[in-house]
Image (tube, rainbow, N blue to C red; front, side, top):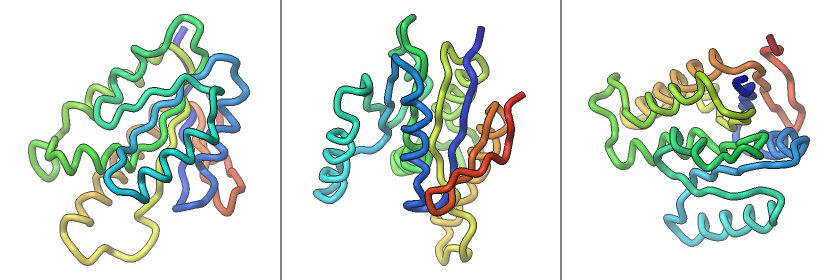
Length: 177
């Protein structure tokens, strides 16, 4: 039996990660997949704070590039994998120039989407809606925004449940099957 996918989206500091953690805490055996890398002091402090907040409630895996392999960390006892977050992951891939062109595919994204077609356990994925505001001034940021929008659409299509979090309030926009 394949696991269900819950996608949690929203704006910056909307409460989406907190809501995703709450969903994952309903399970006994949890894996947390962190996509962030400590690229500066502020990010390092943020990562350390998040680690302290989670404590030993999750088995933590840090994977900035290959989310397709995150399910390999799941054991038979793992009930849920929480991935936080797709925008940071996409930024990592973009920074490392993993795309074959502006609109072409990226091998890590293809592998991840393939893994989501039959996850070994339930999956909670945090993403962000960055296309709700003004059009970015530079082409690189517009390209990133467009790629994230397309990635979000593909993951939402595979998801069983989709929640949009606004001001800490989750709104279900795709009910379960």
